[in-house]
Amino acid sequence: MVKNKKQIETTWNWFVARYKKLGYRSLNQFANATGFQKSSLSRYFHLQREIPSGTISALCSVLKVSPNTLMKVIGEEWK
Image (cartoon, rainbow, N blue to C red):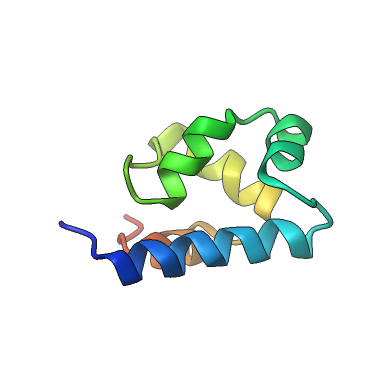
């Protein structure tokens, strides 16, 4: 599925708003505190790379969202 600029912007903005709501001031701070690679997070939420299935649960946990919510944000179905 090809993602358009609006989808990418909406997804990235959701992610930034979410980590800021959780008290992180930057992507770097979020990545350092949670153990995720900053470059991977950027690729996931700029829709350049799929989130590996083994990463979804951990990412949902730190973002405090359900897998279903995360999948809706990135435009995929949770199976």
